[in-house]
Length: 86
Ligand SMILES: C[S@@+](CC[C@H](N)C(=O)[O-])C[C@H]1O[C@@H](n2cnc3c(N)ncnc32)[C@H](O)[C@@H]1O
Image 1 (tube, rainbow, N blue to C red):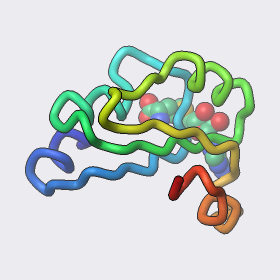
Image 2: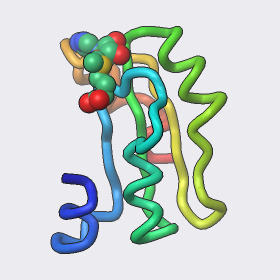
Image 3: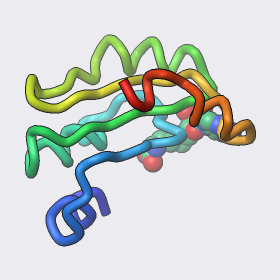
Image 4: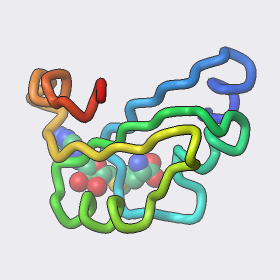
């Protein structure tokens, strides 16, 4: 889905809510393989998930990954977070 979005639709910014623990093919890896400048913001309500994600999910130099500790049921907390637009 990410590959389709970036290749066929030209989407370059992704908001990945409910990130989960880092795996082999995370959103930013798939996206930045196609476009190294792609920007991905990961959101999860579990602080442990975010701690692992921050440690392991490193962006390409051209792109960016950011991490927001927030709950989807409070969408304003995601939309107001400075990480979203920094
Ligand atoms: C099964 S993992 C998903 C992993 C990955 N996104 C995937 O598709 O393989 C679900 C994640 O969603 C997070 N989550 C569940 N409810 C959430 C909510 N209301 N707001 C933010 N994150 C939530 C959980 O903490 C968990 O890390």
